[in-house]
Image (cartoon, rainbow, N blue to C red):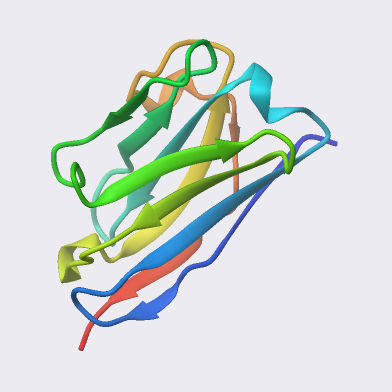
Length: 123
């Protein structure tokens, strides 16, 4: 059974950090591009980071560039999103997803999704 499970969300103060994990089961992550998305209340789901399946190139939305870092550990079959300097506007449900294709933000490009993990940035 193909499954992605996110973890690591929570409540953090502005300026704080969190590391999200995306654990895969039923398939090996190294054959896929991995994307991180988020969805705030009343807003559309947006892509914020992606790591290529081919050469490990990474991509970031302007809103998180310089603050977030995506990585993957193929031995653990897990991807990560390190989030630093968090802001209240980062509050959202965060999702990981996989695709056999290229890093593209359109949600229709992605085949498998996790259930999401809540991140709340508030003092």
